[in-house]
Length: 260
Image 1 (spheres, rainbow, N blue to C red):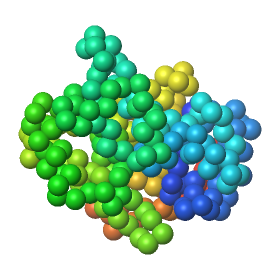
Image 2 (tube, rainbow, N blue to C red):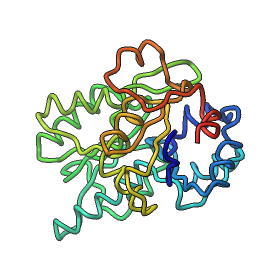
Image 3 (cartoon, rainbow, N blue to C red):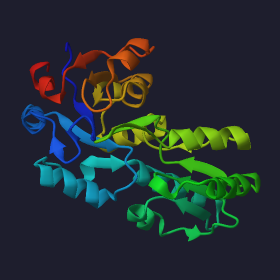
Image 4 (cartoon, rainbow, N blue to C red):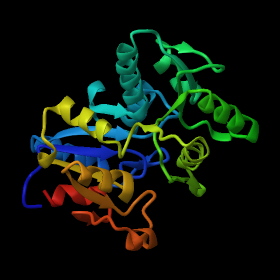
């Protein structure tokens, strides 16, 4: 790498760890980067765990991070809703269709499943069924806008790849003729929020992740450099077909310390 970045953005699942196990060499790599004076921020589209649960999980695996160094999609959504509420000049009614662990992230808003101003959609696992889809369809046809905590296509699990909530977000956009407000990666506002928190320009920032679309592509559209790691959801065939060209491709996060 010709320029040492001032800030490195790090995806979590699939990049730093898989399941409950750190990627080999990941902890040592981050310690080396910090020793070089490089600022780190941890980014995630995970919507099944609260901010504190994610921080506790990382620390339990041996990663060192400050409370303000992790920024998740639910936190970004809460900030966006606060701005929208201020613009509206009245309390917003929302339908937070999210995991129970992050319900408290939206406790400052009125919860209304009948006539919401916004549907906030996150990962809800096995709760999807046709009745729920039709309720969402009718809420949006009744005027509700859709906020999706992310629009991931697929994700890596211990059982292999599985379709992500982008499947439902895209379907609701199509049948309702509306565009969702997307939080998390690769949303530009999400990336800008993180850059602002660190006080670093995009040109001085490197994004590292296992998702060539959301991590690498999203970062490059912001003027950052993008590094793809061959762990987690990485698949050689998908990489070969992508129009996104990473600035660097590494076998794993462990190799990053030797490149900077």
